Image (cartoon, rainbow, N blue to C red; front, side):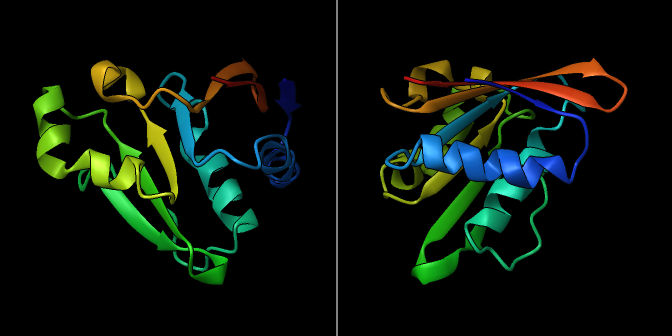
Length: 139
């Protein structure tokens, strides 16, 4: 699935489409350059899930936990600053990934050997000053 966003407000519609396209998936991996809009799209998805918490990138904490509607949990990872996959293992990543909760992972390329076998891959590319191309694949 290929989607294009030309404004941050349009991301709410894209988030709704993404969740409808992947109703049974809980692991979402976000690929894209720094500043491409990974966190901004995750904020929109969390909004669609009913998250009331402030959604921010867990750049230094590595993982943020959010409360979604219906007592669901959502976890937001940022692996950019990891020096090795061992750091994610020490964090107990598998408890999150296999909890059945939503997991949104920025910089999954930092932990390639730890990724679950099934996930949604989201690649975000800057295609203009205010435009983003978003490619979504279910794997």
